[in-house]
Image (cartoon, rainbow, N blue to C red; front, side, top):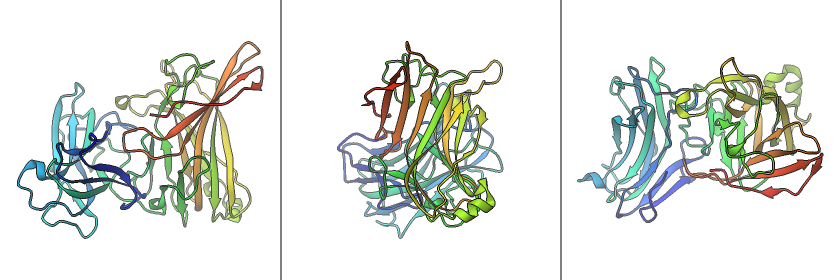
Length: 407
C-alpha cells in the first residue's frame, strides 16, 4: 500500500540499494498528508504468528539526502514503525524508529535496530505491519533497505522478504541465514530483478554466483489450487484463480532460462549439486495464519546444454498432485527456482509458468495456464504480469488470449 497522490513520489527504486538492487524510496516536500509505504501482513510463509516471549531484533538500514533537520513536531519527522496486532485486529503495540535528522544527509547506509531486551511481545502477533513514513511537513529524500526481523536466542516467527529485491508474490531464502538479519553472502547478494535481459516484457530474475558453496532460492508464495471462482473449462483464470485442480492431476511447471559462465565439466563430475532445480511444494494451508503446511516437495534438477553459455531456452518438469495426509486438503502450490549447493555461474529466469493438464476427451475442454513475471512492483501493489490461456478440445489448440493482470 502507498500513500495518496500529491503527497510525494514513492518508488521501488534502483538508484540506491544496500543489496539485491532495490530499495523503498520517498521524495517529498511539505504536503497536505504524510507519505507512507505500508506492508502487507508480514506474518506469513513459514510461521502462522510472530511469537511472544522472544527477544526480537528488528530494524532496517536507511539513507537520507537533503532532509529537514532538527524536527520540532511529529509532522516533520521521518520514521519506520513495526506494529503488532492480535487475532481480532486490536493493536498489541508499536515500535518506532525515528530516523536521524541531525544532518541533512547521511554519508551512506545507516543501521537502526532494537537493543537487547527492548522488544519482547507479551502475546502472539497475528498481523505485523511495517510502515515507512515521511510526515506531512518532512522534506527531502529517504531510502530504506534490508529490514531486520529475527529472534535473539529463539524463533520469533520470521522469514519473509527483508531485502526488498523481489516483487510481491515472490519470496526467498538466501545465505548465510535467510536474509532476515540484513545479511546476504556467498554470491546471493548479487540476486536481482534486472532489465539487462528479458525473454518477454522488460525484466527477469538474475542469479550471479561466482563460486558455489551454498544453496538458496527465490520462490513464489502459495497459490490456491481451487479458488472457487468458477470452472476451468471455458473460463478466464490466471495463476491466482486456478480451479478444479484435483489429486492425480499433472501440473507442468516451466521456466525460460538464459545462462552464462557455466562449467559443464564440473556438472558432469559432481552431479546434481552442481545444478539448478525447480522445486514444487504442495501445502495443506493458504492464509497468513495457517502456517506453512507443506506435505510434499521435491528438488527436481534441470539438465542444461553441455556448454559454457546458452540463449533463452524453456525447461519444464511435470508433477502429479499428491494425496495429502489423512483428514487434510491439498490447498495450495508454491514453486522455487533453486540453485543447489555447488552451482556457480550466471542464470537469468523469465516467464515461470504453471500448466494444469487434466484428462479429457472429445466432450471436454482442458485449460493450460501460463503466467509470466515480467515487470515491476511496489511492495504490496500489483505486479505487471499477464496470463495466457489456451483452450484444448479433442487435442487441438485454439487461439491464445491474453488475460487478467496478476494482482
